[in-house]
Each structure stands twice: as C-alpha cells, then as structure tokens.
Length: 325
Ligand SMILES: Cc1cc2nc3c(=O)[nH]c(=O)nc-3n(C[C@H](O)[C@H](O)[C@H](O)COP(=O)(O)OP(=O)(O)OC[C@H]3O[C@@H](n4cnc5c(N)ncnc54)[C@H](O)[C@@H]3O)c2cc1C
Image (cartoon, rainbow, N blue to C red; front, side, top):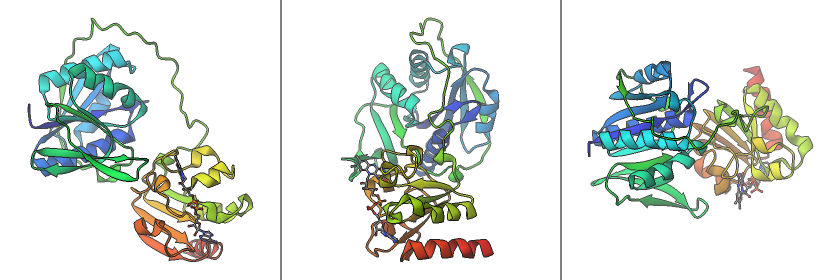
C-alpha cells in the first residue's frame, strides 16, 4: 500500500463535474492532514485539455487513462480500468463524487477488487490509524463515524456539497499516461442519448446566490416579494418542500434531502424553519441569511446572519435598500 490518495475525476460535455472538484478539495485537505500524496485520476478518450486543467491544481500528479472504450461511461469497462489502476498503484484510498454514475460504479468496483466501500460521506476525521469517514444515518438525524476494516485501497464516495469548489487550491503537476488493457472487456450495455434531468429547468447547484422560501410565505400570490429580492441579488429562487408540495413552485426548485443539494455563496432563507431534511441540502452555503419570526427556529443555528421578524416587512425593505445601493 502506498501513502497516496486518488480522486476519480468525472466529466461530462468537456467539463469536470462539480462533485469531482469538491472531492478534490476533500482530497487536498486529507493530503495536508496526513502528508499523503494526492493524485487526480481521469478516465476518458482524448480528454487531454481536462487532464491539463487538473495539472493546474494542487496535486502530485494527474493520472490519465486514455482509451476509445472509455469515451462513454460503461460500468464493465470503467470497473476494469479502475481495478487495474488500483491494483497496480495500491493507493490508500480512492475518492469519488456520489453522483449517479458512481452510485452504479463504486459498489461494482469494491466487489471486483474485494475492498471496503463507504458511500455518501459528508467528511472525514483524521485518526491515528488513518481516516474515519462521516456519513449521515437515520434520515440524517445522526452523523456516524465509519471505519473501514478491509485492506487498502478503500473506496469512498462524497456527498454533493461536502466541500466548496472555491477552496480548490491551485498548483502545478505533471500529467502521467497510465495504460489499461481493456480489449478483452465486452461491453454489455449501450448508452442512449444523454439527457439532463433538469433540462429546461433550473440547476440550482450552479447558482451563486439563492433566495429560498418556506411555508412562512403562506400562499402562492405572496411569492412576488421573494422573486423581487432574488432579482435584485441576481439569485435563483428555491423552496422548502411544503412550498413545492403545494405546487407554488416547481419540484426542480426544492432544496433538501429529497431535492437538490446546493453550496452557493449566499443563501437567503425566508420563512423556513430549518428542518434537518432542508438543512442537509444547503448547509454548505458560504453565507446563510435567515429571516424568521420565531427566534427559536432551528435555521438560526446554522445562519451566518439571523433576522427575527415578519418576512412580509423585512423582505421588501431589504429589496428596497439593496436597489438603492
Ligand atoms: C422523507 C422526508 C424528506 C423530506 N425532504 C425535504 C426536502 O428535501 N426539503 C425540505 O425543505 N423539506 C423536506 N422534508 C420536510 C421537512 O421535514 C420539513 O417539514 C420542511 O422542511 C418544513 O418546511 P418549512 O420550513 O418551509 O415549513 P415549516 O416547518 O412550517 O416552517 C415555516 C417557518 O416559517 C416561519 N414563519 C411563519 N410566518 C412567518 C413570517 N410572516 N415571517 C417570517 N417567518 C415566518 C415559521 O416561524 C416557521 O419557522 C422532508 C420530510 C421527510 C419526512
């Protein structure tokens, strides 16, 4: 086993996925905490520009496996390529984003190489023997520290929003070509045309500013004051689940355990109590402003700034002041 951390870099339409950038941030922190080396691992075909982009980050190397068979995601091919890399390099662990592709791939890979897997982690702790991984349990009511007992390499998937991409450190590394023998792998699946779940809708995970509204808004007709504030802040409008269940806003605007996970620079929560199922989707926002008439609302526990009062007074006043500024 080498003292190395590998991070699998997923990409789509020529761009590195946000979840992978977040995983790289966690990898950088783990490397800083442990003194282990850090390596970005990218699979694909003719993705040199992405490999070079990664070489500008604080990593020890970028390991690039290039093969026409890796052009599209195929679980058998990807699993074989990763098995070969992990068997040869024997890193301490492989980190990857907890995205749909890896929800498919990670257990298959762990079973193929017979190593331990922890999924959907929100962080890690440095302990004497190495690392433990933090994952939420019982509908996010508890955080559990999970230890892996198998030999290395371990496989760990990280929840979206577990780090902020703004914390990604720059650096300079070389791109190292890594071969994998994939000719004998028979692909058993055929990919159909890719489509975006959020096509024509909003992808809140990319929003820099979000104004979110909860049941405190009372009825759909009152949403105008929220939309005005959002427009002033160049923000997307988002919602808690009751607002979506009432069909005041579309399902694609729901934040939380059964909605989207976001980590914007600014998250303004208006009339949202701060139930755990909501918080899990927005707690990694850099600055949280909560407006709530109940001083004991749990949202204030995670707010950077709290305003106790009636949102029907505060939100229009805030919009007016921001417009003046
Ligand atoms: C399996 C499961 C999954 C779930 N998934 C999600 C999810 O993805 N996202 C999600 O959001 N929820 C989810 N929920 C629901 C969650 O448990 C809460 O019920 C929900 O988040 C509460 O939404 P809310 O804060 O808007 O409403 P409430 O809890 O009713 O809070 C309304 C808040 O508005 C305040 N308020 C009222 N009037 C005013 C006013 N005039 N001015 C200022 N403040 C005012 C109140 O003080 C209160 O704090 C889920 C629940 C379950 C069981």
